[in-house]
Image (cartoon, rainbow, N blue to C red; front, side):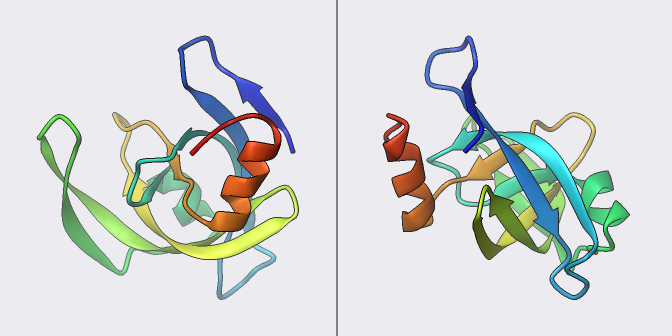
Length: 118
């Protein structure tokens, strides 16, 4: 697994492949910050749209600082190394930072294997 530490304390980035669940051959890759406390993963909307994923609806989200934002909401297949799973995704806008929700038990075990707790 390609996991690299970032200079900020507690930040980890991983290489993620996103796939369109209706057309799995359509895919995109990006590096995302792992956020073990996130409820949803946030991915730049243009990456999702480039692989044919469309938002199903718009939702309002409350950020950790209390700010409320409205963003597109849909689903994608996430792959990290050989692990794959379908999950909800928030369509990020230019001012947003990508964040990977890291809650699946198998993926958490992968992080633990390289010394990261989540």
